[in-house]
Length: 292
Image (tube, rainbow, N blue to C red; front, side, top):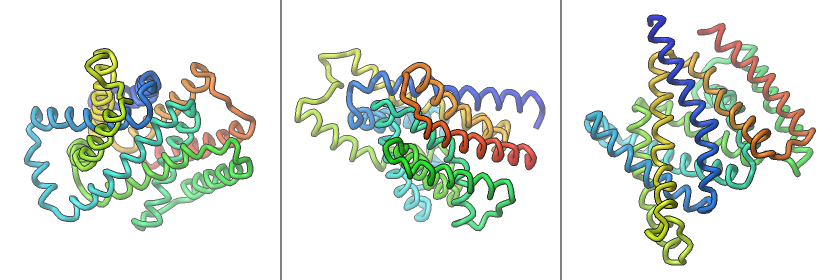
């Protein structure tokens, strides 16, 4: 890997992470007027649409067919489709109900939780630094559990769903975008049925009478796909360790946006728990750096 390629990869991963953390968070909070359910529905529909286009343009249909004829891959992607649906729903709910800081908590602990899941289910080895970072995350969660009023349950749900999703995706060797395309197709019928009932009850914001709302909800697709492609490109060029460190830009951006821009409440108990988490993240990042 040459220096120029690494720099381009790092730039791409950084752009994708910033997009998720700042632009993505702002956008989905901005369209929260449509309600969590309809936003999730349109994210599913238009993500499927855009991945259909990219799969065609990039001529990846052979990969699509290859996955479909593999029963193991097909079944795991069926399961992960519901995990990602749950993750999207929880995160969009958090953004639309001014719980962005709580959601960022989940994305801070997700990589460390993934390491723990890898140890439990894939027999991956843990060194002292990773064990210590896992224990700190556990201590932070236990501390918050004594103050349930400010317990960031949406962050915990986001982290568990996303870590489980990544655990299962590790079991199969499929390209991220094609895997997401198949997952989105699995949940597309559910999204269309939900949208049908939303329309039947007259609760839809996606309507010909409001072209602006239609366009904004349509953008949920590219707002999901574009940063995904940027981050994937970054991983390919600068490697997993470097992109793993860069990923923390996402929850950091979410936290700063929630605290400084949306003025979300941040209690002393949450501050203490976040200090625990940031310490765990620093240990985890140092370990990634030393083992790069």
